[in-house]
Amino acid sequence: MKIKGELRKYCPRCKGHTIHTVSQYKKGKDRSMAEGARRMSRKHKGYGSFPKPIQKRFAKTTKKTVLKYKCKDCDYIVQSKGMRMKKVEVMRV
Image (cartoon, rainbow, N blue to C red; front, top):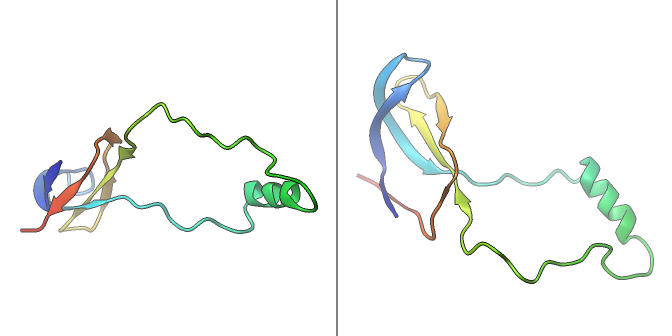
């Protein structure tokens, strides 16, 4: 799906329609000392195989894509609800 790189959208901070730049949300780096990572490292420790079953069959063919809209006036970022699409292309103007 092709999406325009800039569009007019409502900004809750400016309380009006302003120009927003569009970008795709990307997941950040995992924290190595998070509780889940520490729990998983305890399970991995020592002799043995992977403690959880690895999923081989997937029900969905696409992942949900979240778009970030950044206001050009106040730099406030609004995220869209996740939409299912195979490919996202943000067109720069």
